[in-house]
Length: 216
Image (cartoon, rainbow, N blue to C red; front, side):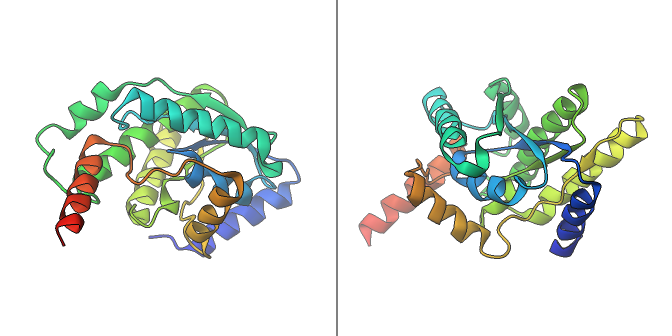
């Protein structure tokens, strides 16, 4: 799998162009977005794409989206960032997860969840004239960055076979203390920081761990 130096090469090529290309950045929540936006704002004209059919409750979904909107109005490096809300369609997530409800996090169910969200992002990017697409998912130590990048580059190839010029920006934002920096930014801006990925299955596993820790 492509390593982090490829990401740095991509940024250098963008900088050499002298013009900020448009990027559609799929985001799962505000804390994960914070450091990613900090890294990318000097290189791209950024639109954050909030597409997360995996989130189990509308209240949780809305809370994450509202927090993201607040952050982009407060952080100096995010003031020009646009936020676009994709459709909230949890039925697509449950259809994808059917028969794999008991699998743990980082299983094949998660792979297909990444693919569900990135596919929609690539589709929206092409339809709306973006030059790049990527995701904030890789900043989490609980997400498999190799899978995320594998899916992203496969989607790039698929789009180009269809004659559509779209580039996937390599994603491993946890590198160089990225996850730590996201925690620092969360504290600085008082961000709501959830303790599960968003789906009902990760919520179930979280609650089980809490229950077991109380017994200890």
